[in-house]
Length: 282
Image (cartoon, rainbow, N blue to C red; front, side, top):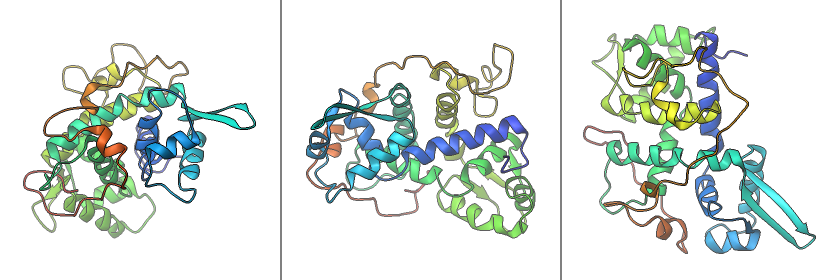
């Protein structure tokens, strides 16, 4: 059922991306996926890699990722069970470096080093704000729009001033800007920079190869955003094998080593919030 008054195909696209973000954004989910990227692991092997998860905290995350179709469970015997990435989970891995690249370019830079995986987590937190995806979609498609117009599109049937809290949040996050009360809203450089992220997420959610991300009808690049094949940007049944995880997620400067951030013996701290200069805030 449509949740906006965007065209049906666009509404479905936004809904798929929102659902995809909801699968991976909950805390530690990305780390669980990365822990399983090399080989299947037993529950105790996973807990050894993520020692900060105690008291049964890992099990609900595995269950949620299993329900999302990203992690599978194989029962070899009563006492031997392993967890592994499904084909869909493996296909998601190359999307993570795309998110990390955006975060490194546009998120505020804290005083100390930030692991790549935390960059991914911080970016996902911004993108899962309520109503964020459809608002960003409309602003990308229209260049600018009034609050009333956005409310009519994103919150049909509701009281239109309800659009202001999510808009203020997106402004605070550095993704949207306005000249002031009564002026239209538009994407910032950080907001426009989300093209690669949303294109990749949309391609993955629709079962398309990530090479199609640049063809996205809204977020694609100007010379490639028209699909070469007929038809709309819709889900496909077949899913192509995913390439190996990009080294960009594993190493890089000034990023700290991924393994040290992912498998440290203490839970990584969340960043303090501060207004960035020319970028999105964490």
